[in-house]
Amino acid sequence: MNSRLITPLRGHLNVRFLRMLSITLEQMALLEQAVGRGAFANLAVRTAELERETDLLEYELEDLCLTAMAQPLSDTELHFYVMVFRSLADLERVGDYGRQVGRDLEALGPLAQTAALQDVLPIARLLSNMLERLAYAFAERDLDGVREVIRLDFEQVDALYEQLQRASLTRILENPEDVGAALTATRMARSLERLGDHVVNVAERLEANMLQAGD
Image (cartoon, rainbow, N blue to C red):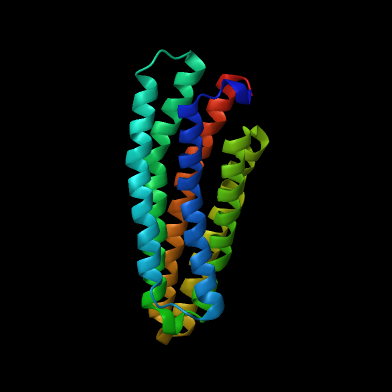
């Protein structure tokens, strides 16, 4: 959509929505840094602080959407605000899952260098890539970019999750002493897989909005 058609309210909403997306990117970065440095202190607190910011942004963006939808709007404008409004619950859940993974990783800090927990990192990195692409697609109205997010989840996130499930089961059978780390890695991977599902929900709505607007 031509930038000159973006009202101040929509411009502010765009900025805050992009901030909501970037929070989960920060959560993923914290997870990677913690494992890379072997430093897990306060990871649960830091990811929880970011999740609380997500909650506040959800309320703020809900108010912005409702304010916009109370005004006369074209069908295209209305579709955009409905798309954002419906996506807020998904992004709130994304923040919840980021917090849960941070909590689990800190709890198992001494074991975080085991192969079982290292297996979780590729999923976190892939989700970071998807979130970056989604943020760019939202900001630039990039239809190809948003479709790439959907493709990555379908082709890679689910495959990585299934691969980790199989690897964890093998480790439990071969090394029963690693059962705690393996089960926690599985729980973390499940949280990340669900996080990806919510990201895709947002991507699919954005794709539909772009098609409706003729982008």
